[in-house]
Image 1: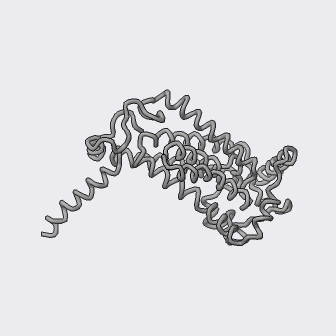
Image 2: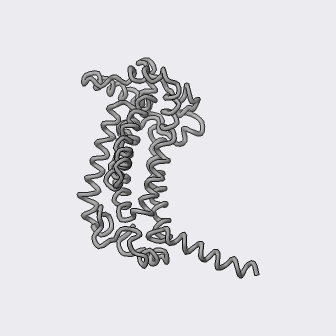
Amino acid sequence: MVAVTSRPLLLRLRARLSLALPRGWRDAVLQVALWGLADLLYEGVRGLVAGRGDAALANAHAVVAFERATGLFFEPQLQRLVLGNHDLVVASNWLYVNIQFTVNALFLAFLYIYRNQIFYFVRNMFFVAMGMALVVHLIVPVAPPRMLPQLGFVDTIHQIAHINQDSGAVSLFVNPYAAVPSMHMCFALLIGITAVVLTRRRWLKLVWLVYPALVLGVIVVTANHFVFDALTGAVTAAVAFLAAKQVMARVRPAAWAWAPVGRRRVGSSAPAMAAAGAGQTGPGRS
């Protein structure tokens, strides 16, 4: 009796879960696999640059020289101001450690489920940006300011949060010589601008407008990035947008454009949702 009554319950649960996936299970698994592969390639660079610490430090000093010549080298003074507020430093440390993965993953999951027709365009922007960063990190490794204590920088995450990004388990997820471009800044812009365009509520637009500025403050006051790094991150975001719009969307306009040809907004049609839940992935999606 238990087996008989539980089977319909499981079927109903599976049907509801399927309806929550706009393109069915197959496409959802494919997207997770693609992100896993992209992250594996991106993180794999860490091992290739592990022995290039001297070059990375030399490049960091070159960044400092550029900032001094252009009047941008104010990060040590800004950090000293923030260090006087312990709570602000703790909050900045927490945001730096958690914001990159958490906000990115939640926002992309939201797009996939509720704005599926936009997800693929945004995904492609992320992939282009990660590919560009991977190449730059390989060719021009750059150490973060936290590795230049002689210039007045304090590694707040290590000294205050007692987390060493360069050793132990944490180092498995951190490329210490990937300061340029700042992918924190790049991803914050890609997400923030996308959210501003999509949301209708003014207060939410304001939140997402402020989000990249918040990330900029966090990466600078924790001495994980120079302002120059953030600027290169912004350039990376701009190029990724142009590549997704002018190249990739033209290659597959029905699948990869911002407003795909012939596609409806997710949730606008119950039959379409039902078809997606049944595993019909539709033409041109990947």
